[in-house]
Length: 309
Image 1 (tube, rainbow, N blue to C red):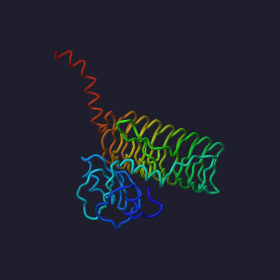
Image 2: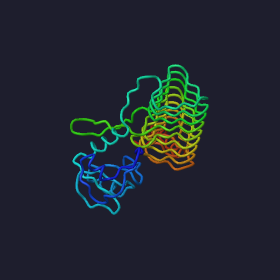
Image 3: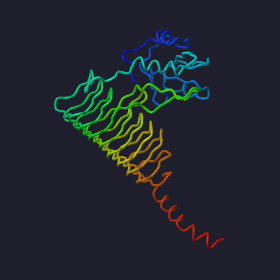
């Protein structure tokens, strides 16, 4: 997520009660978890084995709980509870705002858009020209919907990220700071559920079509002209290329990369990155010709065992 205005790192250190190490003249422009950091971003790390990944990432400012050598050009903020400091910043700059009416404050709906009865629209939502939202849909805070988008009845868009920090006393909820961005000419089926990103955005590319009861986890990115059939589920931070087709009940775990023009057949479970331009099947999914050969061999196993006792 981007900050409303750049924050000098000295001011940031004072704000969270941290000791500043390294470059003390630069400014923070955003907040992101390690998977989506860019130059100018604040991130955090509180497990020493992940220090190197954070210090060598694109992040400019790293909140951490143990003094270490500061890479050139970076700023380290030493704090006893990096997660709490980081989460507090997200809460400060993307605070919880309870909705008290059907259309929240700061929302902009194009006059040509059609909004049916009982649609609930959160705060700071943008809905573009000629878009159509059917009855009983929910559009959460900070969602951005492009032009000619069709959202069917009962779709739930922009809910909190399912993301928790495990600590000794239980699971601590990460404040959701990301958004859902739906580009032009997208269709969202009835009863789909789409989470906001933790700090980055969940993005649905132009022309993509989702069937009913599809779930997209936090920070998922769909490319252009993807086709996702009913009851498919995609884990958080997974990135799909352009023109990907997922048949019904496909499940994809978190943090994968699926190449352009991939087809995954119905009922498959994807547990690894998939190369572009291929068709996959099975659980765990493999290239379809390999998967079918394995199934054929498996069917012959009982007879094989009978003749090879």
